[in-house]
Image 1: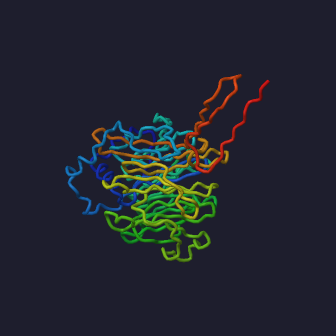
Image 2: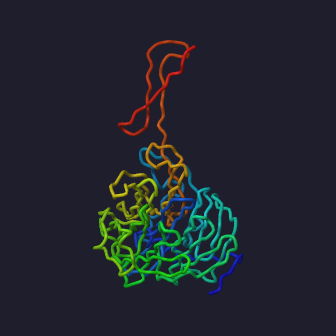
Image 3: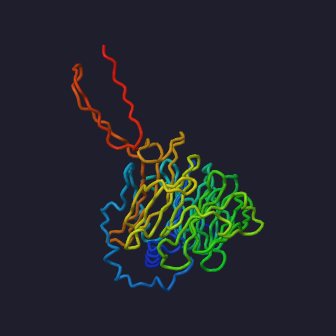
Length: 414
């Protein structure tokens, strides 16, 4: 296959991209997935396995529910969190894209034609490589040292490695309908979810990032979906239904113990531990390594079938609370690591955050954006006598975690 560099950008798909976006918003094959920790972040977008006849719904019937105002805020942070900023991805509404972010907010984006490095505001910094023909993006992953980019596409199943300094492209492996990639805790290895078997099955493969060899370690039911890896090397994967539309409560999260993933024979769902159940869908899972928690984007959470809900869970799968609710399809969770050991949570210092993407590409003015969420800060209000005067005073704390203490230290008087 020929790889081109620095060629003019080609037009992205139109109608086909809109159909794909509709299927994504409806929950087919889970949609966007992503996770992260460390010096790089990443979002993965939907690869397509097939178009089911059940999805051939006349778009005219959906027009009223799909035409939201582009100026409206699509998501609402819950108590203890604030929206810390957003950047536009609306130019990608006409086609497909996967991206992976650096901590500074710049990102690598793969739109099916080109692999580009863009600044946080979208300015094109460098085109790393171009494809000779359009392919459906599956994922983008940046190596921890920032020197290699891994790109997956589901049209031919190729997984590529791109050397960032030189831009050279290597075909690393082929896994049919690959969906998501996550680095293992062991350097040089990663796990990939892909529909390499029968329709409606999801296989997990361990990929040697140096040799390009793959070993199938598990096979579960349903469409291929998002996965992540915890601090111990255990694999967490969303088991999605194998039918469309997804039945309510039909999605769960399974944990495969690292010790069992030896590749001697593929494991099944009976070998895993169910840690989350009763979900309507799942587009993204991100484990916050070092803080014993993970984040999951549940999809199909509203009556329209297009809502999403971002929630936090402890390492064992106990739900800790809701972070954000969105009226549209959302995914691509990225943990923005502070590097100083802080933990993301409600009313926590805003050094650590979450990024995710949300899209309403069927609106009259299509909108897609990458949103950043941080912990809200409690505010303390003093009411009492002025400086140098005596009398009663009151302190009012707005926001904060119930049951916690507020410490005050009066200034010494001369």
